[in-house]
Length: 145
Image (cartoon, rainbow, N blue to C red):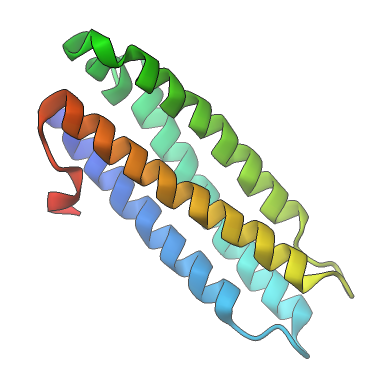
């Protein structure tokens, strides 16, 4: 369990840092520099996508944290399933945000809105995970974040 919690804390820290970088990139001006803005945001979304994929791979592994939670607290199996479903939802949000990046004279507002939706979904997912771990082990994941 301790190894799984350590890994989860590392994944959370990486994902949280990626969220911050995406938000900073998103907040930079796009007027008069849309191509650069889209390129920079796209690069940060790629980094966030890598962090998200690593989080999903580690937590959903056959011997990962989600498996451990179900073994330790079977009553939480339904909540673990919801976390797995949320992983798929996060992937879809990420793809929508990437697909909305403007090419030439695209819609910056739409790209911003979809990226904000992604960031909101990731933050909610982090809260869901923290609650699940606390309920399973009575451990605060944020304590070492």
